[in-house]
Image 1 (tube, rainbow, N blue to C red):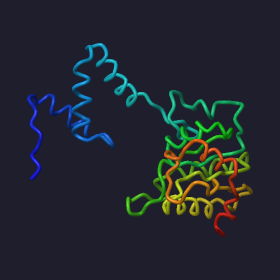
Image 2: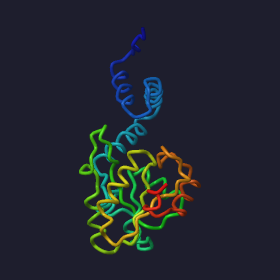
Image 3: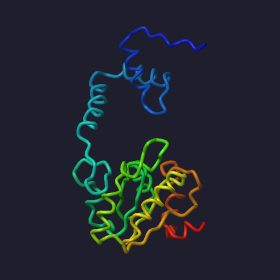
Image 4: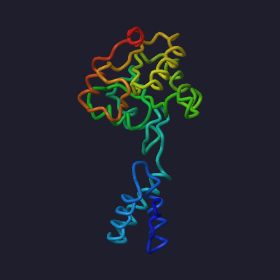
Length: 209
């Protein structure tokens, strides 16, 4: 039988419990983080706490691509040197950061905010698909690159979007399968991810594999 950890202070216990709610943080790590904060000056702890509060209160989602931003339009969408005609469709904000770190893509992004996953209760209507269609309807988009995780859910989402939008005169492509089946974009090394974008294939070709 595992005994519950006892704390000398209720305040300490409450803080540890809150840190433990973060992904990947167990009670031991949470305790270590809280004890570290206790050693810091009031000014440093206030800066830490206020940065989290300010993040939650003031962060903005780009009105065009749904990336996080400090302004209505993110720095990528607002950059005139980026290729407006190429859209890279990703699952989340972490994937935008991963692809940007490859320095192999100069187009713009569209963050879906998830992937279709019936087991998790996530359907097409829960994703930013309607706004993607609006971009394509505007007539400026020439290529849509699917850069979703190479999982069953990712492939299902790719296929759903393709079937919904292939009526438009747009080329649909997907990252090369140098990315292993089952891989999530954010965990792929930069060289492999960069090559998979450069060597992307048409989506129709990927269906025949």
